[in-house]
Image (cartoon, rainbow, N blue to C red; front, side):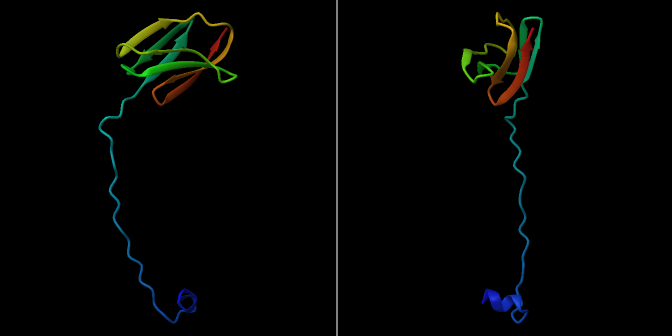
Length: 94
């Protein structure tokens, strides 16, 4: 039947369906910044913060206690991946 419709002998109707946008009111914007050995995390209260080296090994992991926190990090020189909830940032320690 489909091949016949391609020949134009059977008209096929197409109906557009409405799709509703889903907006999550629980969206939380998380800020991550690193300067001079200090990691600043905003909007991450209660979320897990994980620090990974470039080999993918977790070097530190802890829960963020508060919406605006600053942590003194004692990391070796190199690049690291910081993950808070679903937000990921890359930092460089010099």
